[in-house]
Length: 149
Image 1 (cartoon, rainbow, N blue to C red):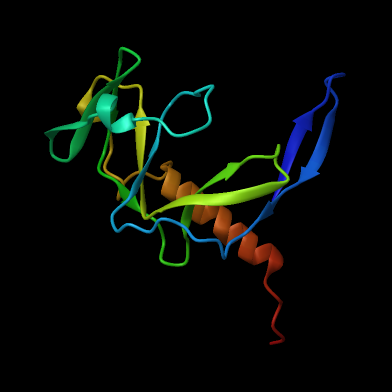
Image 2 (image 1 turned 90 degrees about the horizontal axis):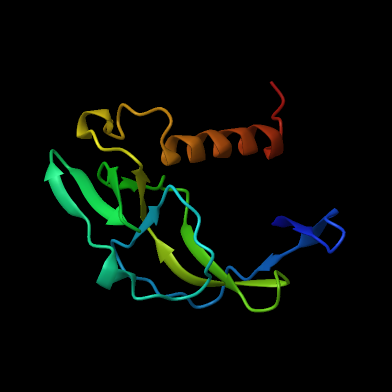
């Protein structure tokens, strides 16, 4: 895995990061990763379950508030069978990434007030899972060996 880092002169340099995929990880069935439409300037554990409590409002559409703003999402989309969802943490500035938790599905939240505009994952071509599948298809096309005819 590669990450761009900016030094004091605002120049971009590449760093190599190692991920230990054999490390012990908390494995719980049904874990969901929530993709929020914002960035959070905090890395670490937080009691999210106390503050982020989605409610199903209609036909699988979920509603919640985050920092006082309403957000909506359709139901969680399961990862493809050949993909493992993993949250990684670092303690040494991206030298080693340690797996912290695994997840099986992703809920993609949007800044939206109208539930009619939240399209179900089966019809949504721009969802996070379909973008992930596109990236995997491109990766296989580039890296898989070419078999002779």
